[in-house]
Each structure stands twice: as C-alpha cells, then as structure tokens.
Amino acid sequence: MGGSAFPALLKASLKSYYRNRIAIFFSLFLPLMIMVIFGLLNLGGNNTTENVGIVDQAHNDASKQVIDNLGKVSVLKVQQGDEGPLKAKLQKGDLALVVILPKDLGAVGAPGAQAPARIPVFGNAAKPQDTEIARSIVQQFFDQQSFAIAKIQPPLQMAYQDVQGKNQTYTDFLVPGIIALSIMQTGIFSVAFAFVQQKQNGVLRRLMATPMRVSEFLAAQVSTRLIMAAVQVVILLVVGLALFHFHLVGNVLELMVVAVIGSAIFIAMGFAISGYAKDEQVVPAIANIIVLPMMFLSGIFFGRDNMPGWLHAVSNFLPLTYVTDAIRTVSLDGSHLWDIKADLLGMVLWLVIATAVAVRLFRWQPV
Amino acid sequence: MIEISAVRQFPVTGALDASYAQGLAIKVEDLRKTYGEVVAVDGISFSVREHEIFGILGPNGAGKTTTVEILEGLRPADSGKAMVAGVDVLRYPTRVKSLIGVQLQSANFWDNLRLTEIIDVFAAIYGRRVDAMAILTKVDLRDKAKAYTKHLSGGQKQRFSIATALVNEPRVIFLDEPTTGLDPQARRNLWELVRSLREEGATVVMTTHYLEEAEVLCDRVAIMDEGRIVTLDTPDALIERLLAKGFRRKKAEREANLEDVFIDLTGKDLRED
Image 1 (cartoon, rainbow over the protein chains, first blue to last red):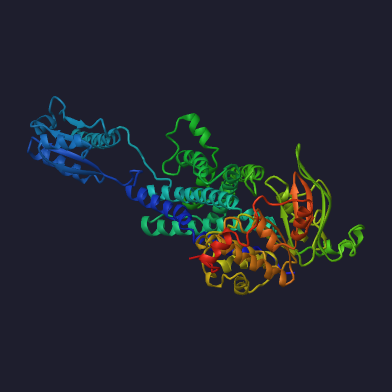
Image 2 (image 1 turned 30 degrees about the horizontal axis):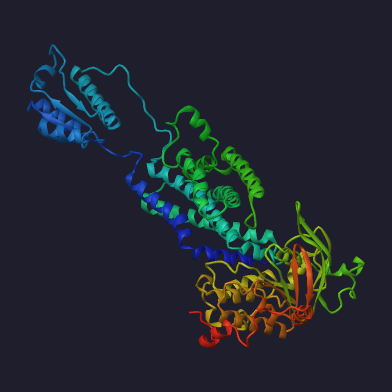
C-alpha cells in the first residue's frame, strides 16, 4: 500500500521553503550582508596602517634622515606638514600621532652631544588604541636610532618567531562566525515561524486527521532545514573565499558535520519556541531573547578574550559558542572532528537538552 | 501505509464482527467523553446509514465537534463503542483515518504550495497516486490548479478543503460547518458538491449552524444539546412531529423568504473573482 510519504513531504517542504522570500532573506541574505559589511569594515584592525604627521622644524640632514627612515616603517603612513593643520587632523581623528622634529634636532642629537634630544609627540586620547600603537612604533624607531647614534648594540634583543605560520586576517575570524550565526538564525527562526503558522492556521490539525506518520512529517521538516543550512554554509564559504580570500585549511566535509549537528540544536530550539509561542507575533520576541545574547557573547564578530571573567565563563557554555569554536577550529586550523571532541560533546549535550524541551513544549494545535 | 494487521484482527475482536454494522457507515453506542468536570458527550448512541447525508446540529457547546472528532480518530473517548467505515475507531484510529475524508473548519493549507502540489502531498500521505486535476475538476477548481491557496475566495477554499478530503476515495466524508461564512451562491454551489459526493457512493456526515441548509440537504439529522442527542430523524418527520404537537408559527409562512428574493435578484452564478 504505497511507500513512505517522506519523499513527497520533503519535496513539498523544500519547495515551500524556497518560495518563502522572507525565510530566504533572513537565513541567507542577512548573514551574507552582515559578512560583507563587517568584512569590508575589517573591524579587527589587522593589516591597517597608522597615520602619523610630522612637523619638520629643523630642516637639516638629521631631520630629513629621520623622516626618510620613518617613511620606511611599513605600518606607518607618514605625512609632512605644518604644526597647526596636522594637529587639527589629529583632533579630527585622521592622524594617530603628530611628531615634531625641533630646530635643534641635529645639534643635540649628534654624537657627543650633552643632553638627549627631546622630540615632542602629540596623541589623541579619544583614539587610545591607534595612538598607542603609533606611539610604540615611533618609540621603537627612536630607540633604534638612538642605539645607532650611540654606536652600541641594544643589550636586550627580541628573537621573534611566528608559530602559526599562517597569515590570518579578521575576515578569517569572521567567516566561520557568520557561518555559525546563519546556522542559528535559520534553525530557530525558520522552524519557529513555520510551525506557529501551521499550528495557528490548522494545517497541523488537518494532517492529524490523515494517517500520516508524525515521524515522517517531522523528518521532512527537519531535513529541509538541515539541507538549507548546508547550502548556506557552501554559499558563505564561496563568498568568503571569493571576496575575502578566506584561508580555508580544514576539511569541508568535517565542517559540514559540525554545521549539521549545530543546525539540529537550533532546529530543536525552534520547535520549543513554536510550542511555547501562542501566535506569530510572539515568535520574534522569544526568539530574540535567545538569539541576541548569543550573537554577541559567542565570539561571532570579536574574540571573547576581552570579556569580564564571569561573562567569559558563562559564554563558554553557550550552544553558539561551541558551534562557532568548532567551525572556526576546523576551518582555520584544519582540526579534525576528534580534535574538537570537547566542542562536539557540548553541542550534543545542547542537542539533547533542546530536543527534550521541544518535545515537552510542542503542540499540534492551539491550546 | 495502512496497517493491514489491524484489519485482520477484526474478526477476533468479538463484538465487532462483520454483521455488527451491516449497511451502516457509522455505528455509535453509549459514547462518552468528559473534560474534567465537563461532560462533553454524555453516552450517545446513533447510526448513520451508507450513502446518507447525515447532519449533526446543535447550539455551540452541545458536543457536536467532540463527537465528530472522536469519529475522525482525532480524540480518544472515555467509554463506549464507535465503528466508522467498518472499523473500531477507538482502537484503530489510524486505520479509520485512511478510510475517511475530513474537512475541518479552518480551510487553510500551506501558503507557498499550489493546489495541485498540496493534493499530491495528501495523496502521498495516503500512499496513493492521484490525478490532481481530476479531483480539482470535481470541486470546480480546475482553473485554479496552479494558484496558491491564499489567492482563493472563501467558497473556493472550502471546496479545496473538500478536495483534499477526496484523495483517498473515502467511504465516509466528515464536513465541519462547510458553508459557514459563504455567500448564498457559494453555499448553494457547495450543496451541489455534497450531493454529488453522495451520488458517487460516499456517506457524508456534516455539522452546520444553518438549519435551512440541514433541511434541504440532509436525509436525517441528529440534534444535540448538552452532550446528548435530543432527537434524530428526517427533517420532514421532525417538522411533522412538531406540527402534530399543535405548534404553529406566529406569522403565517409565505411561499418565499428573503433568501429567495436575494437569489432571484442576484442569480445562482458563483461570484468568486
């Protein structure tokens, strides 16, 4: 007597999802937009240069040499000018630092001179990070010059080595985060909205009046979201690779495994919300209470290192943190599933919790 | 899809042998359902013959919906017996669901699927392949086959809802207030559809709040109140009985009523676009 209704239910569910412009917008275009915007803003600040203004009051060989050498420092962008306009730029935030080379630069700075040359440097307290970076670079430069003038070797020297051996940028950090974010958004919102709607308008009840197997129906609905999540991962990866030269090191299949387990957690949360929510208007409120804190605490856009200790500790246990960390580790470090077993364990625990809550709260009809 | 083993068990369930419900589409005995303190269905018994259009009437809260939902396999009963299409619905609700067709009060489906696609989903649920166009033609929705349900009028939605109830060629069709909210033309159009379903061999059980509808459409009606069936007979017999008690309307009945005027002036053609 016929086979399983699963293929037909899956086909219908996929079609229905694909035709739902709003769902597609929130699950696909929104994460894509966020990724492109944050990627272009390059909020991590890597690879940026600091603008430094130089006022040459000495106009001698010594000052020219200083300016030439400062200009060779790769992370500094040096512009020369008069004190007034440059200080104005500093106040506006266009410059991180203004260095003034005084008239007596050559005389006092020369070998055998009595007093050390005092070089006035102005910073902008409103941009402490940029100013601090520029200040330490310029300081380092002055130190080198001083040692050179004094013709001695620096007594302490740093032997720096890069252990990562990879040139990871902010977008490398961002892309896995956005993938995790989109998995969460799709799972929670697409399920919660769709099921509250189907519950409200009576489709679920109508289906209960057929001999349909509930398991087949739920399997079709869950599979639709898992397939959509996988498609999203591929699209975000492709855009990340094409637009931001994302340094993908890991195995895409392992990445998919992580994405699918992560997606399942948020799908279960979506079912729990749809069971709790009385109507569609309540869905965004409840969903955002869950989604928004995770969006900012799970290290999507920025690392979690700057968080206060207690918040950091809490954020360690968020489901999105496990998913984000797992996706990031697999894609950037090339870790294998076994290497991220702690994250996977956290994800599976959340999956069990979310599923248990969903089973308790889910209803086929309005109460 | 259908649990064959459940069918085979029937001869051994004792009371429910083949002769038990001979010629009957539905047989209910002493059916009872309570919600806490509230007695929704208070030990009712009745039968529906095959090929009958049977109406269940009554004020809100009389127990009509609970009764119908028990017969549809949507709710368990506390006690009693109920045979639907030859199957004990209290024991084998899924088996009954595969034999009946159901139209619920809410006629909504999925917004993003076309009518033919929804019919195909329902067919798959019943493990069947159907000609979706033929079913849509039957309910006069051939022109809307590629439309989405959100673009249907009230009457078209109800007819489509009935179409989804026809994919498994059901022996018994349950219609829950199928004409509520429809204009007189659409209601008459639906009556024709219900009659044609019976012509094709189905038994129709319907609830309605429109008594004139029950009068012209139903072969027999059961009137429920406070969980009990207060009377059950053909509309003619019920009216004759009332008249025999000496009942007379205060105002003499005229040969026509306002609805006749309405139909006379606006015609019987459907208005749906």
